[in-house]
Length: 506
Ligand code: NDP
Image 1 (cartoon, rainbow, N blue to C red):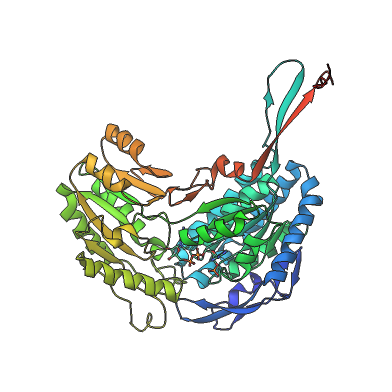
Image 2 (image 1 turned 60 degrees about the vertical axis):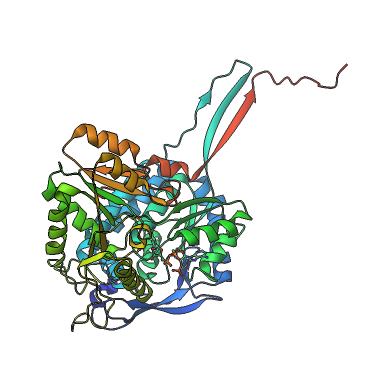
């Protein structure tokens, strides 16, 4: 079969891309009890690709392949050799980054300028993970000279990686990187709306020379589909999931029966706090960008903008002015800032929250509508939207909208800012802008979130642990902390004497 990446040049000519096989056990195989599904280009509202999806037998086959690789060549391979393979994959990824970004943009509608900036960094991330593949050493535990006690870090086993539709390649890299560095094997199930770029990863693993079964890619449906089968399968040792909290709870219930390990990277309603003593221009650059980037479809975005009263009116004014400068349009056009919502249900969800905001009495000061002009009408485009005079009790301030909707909330002082920031069921990320270094430390230390940015926003790297407090998740992705979650610790105690007293001797 011709590589999809090689066919990228023809991706924009209106023909349908066909990716009719699953990547299982190092081979491209037809689904046994899955089938073919269409992937919709959200900027056009019509299918652009036909993609294979897996059923329960396909998932079982992929898990078996992953198990065989774990117990076979991959499990026996020294860390430095795994690292070398990962580096080869990373180099191929770098070569093909643009083509991968185009695939992601076609599937998700994310503006290509954003996909390119993001995907171009993944190769560096994979290299970083490769550098850790031979470094998970255990430790020696001093007791006395009658025993030698030490720990060994061993891979958790077969990982089911379940990824969302907003950032399919980034979410995959956050799971594949540490999983492979730890020596695990993986069955990757991308979201039904965005399967194409993830399937293409299979091609890169194949080309890099990974042993069959180390990485398997099985697109499919979550509920009643490949996702659920993966979670229920007793041969899967860990589920690494990014998505919605309610899905995580369902996964926890289903996967609990087989005592799997879990990491959950869930939603957010991040506070982005602007104090009156901040460099306002920089704060506005960050706050407006983090309201509309990815068309609002990222868990880390500062969707609650908390603004100190002396600068509140100015911030509202600037949000409105800058909303008017956002170029919303065809995502493949590199001049476009913001593409469409990734699928029709997400568009409906965003529009319904805009109605909710109005009904709750928030003041709609910019946007608020689906775009219906000639280049927008067929797609799922929505205007960058700003609500002013939002109170933190409103649903638009409490629930994750996942659309380009900023809620601007005024506050008086530091105490109130901290209280508002923490008054959320989420605790993923937070940002604060101030010119006072003491305040920066004081406030950052009191915020209940997994990541706090001071005078910057959304600075995320492979090496910086990322994950949530409270309803935003379990565990961390990125950083050495992520590697830990793909490893078990085995403690070995060896007697230096070989003597063991008879407890029942007289
Ligand atoms: P989901 O949590 O439903 O989807 C995430 C992934 O889980 C997808 O691959 C999905 O498959 C799969 N999945 C769904 N149900 C199950 C299940 N029972 N067992 C195993 N896997 C399952 O998120 P949605 O796509 O429905 O998005 C809904 C909302 O979630 C968004 O509006 C947003 O608020 C939030 N979200 C948050 C993300 C984040 O980065 N934290 C990312 C995406 C969404 P399938 O695609 O077939 O549904």
